[in-house]
Image (cartoon, rainbow, N blue to C red):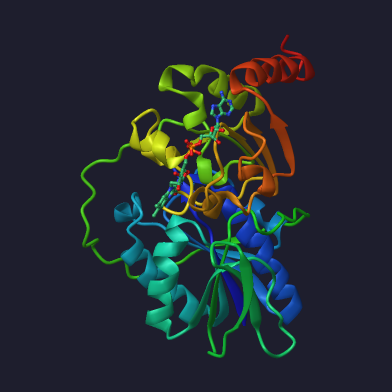
Length: 321
Ligand SMILES: Cc1cc2nc3c(=O)[nH]c(=O)nc-3n(C[C@H](O)[C@H](O)[C@H](O)COP(=O)(O)OP(=O)(O)OC[C@H]3O[C@@H](n4cnc5c(N)ncnc54)[C@H](O)[C@@H]3O)c2cc1C
């Protein structure tokens, strides 16, 4: 029996969230005495065998001309075939946009129980209870999966990547590849240098910045830290920043290792999308701003004074000044 892990990629590059899913799936396999196997849909430019370092023993790769762009309905059928032929009992996804699109479809197709948004390893001593966040991260629940085949999608940045040694055997898998029902006529790429959902560090700003012309100092800090940019909703609504940077309940939900929020009040709808960040730093001129309650570190001060000083300090530390 196996634990099958979906290996997601973008433009041929394996996503960091896939390395987390591989490490997580390999740990489950170790707990249950099964083999960790991976499945890749489409072609990748990276060395798949090297993913053995994350504990996966075998990788099934399905390549086909029509898989250049991922159609999640087609991918669901392919993964179902791989799962059935390899006797997978547990299937692991990252709970990113691809995982959110495929895992529920696969759950229906395989009549398999699904826990979306897992944050810890399942209890494999009998109950197969999986911990997940509920109520926008305000609480967590332990959800038991009773079906024979179990599907878990792991929250991004909820599990540490475990890198060891080893090489995976890469096996071509001859799956039936249906014609996609959806025709993609064009793709508009987001402009950020670092993908928001994959970023380790995110620098975010809100209405306290007064206008789009003041984002230079925010971008500078993000550049120095190799961070992705984010913003509060009113900032995106006012077209100061693109909507793909909007984080929160109605925007992107993120969980970076470091979230720096500048001139953002910390409304509950904003917090819902960022409160899984490991460390939160808040810069706000109002000491009563609600965000300080959720912050690990806070600077009470005017962003227009604090950010230039912070940029200078970071430049010095990085040897750029
Ligand atoms: C259904 C619903 C869904 C929503 N979804 C989202 C969502 O997904 N994401 C989201 O962000 N919001 C969302 N909102 C909006 C949310 O309620 C807040 O209105 C919003 O987050 C406020 O944005 P802000 O903090 O940038 O602006 P403000 O509330 O105007 O706060 C600006 C902050 O900047 C500080 N400030 C001002 N000048 C300076 C300065 N010079 N230096 C430092 N600090 C300064 C102020 O003290 C203040 O705390 C939603 C609302 C609703 C009703």
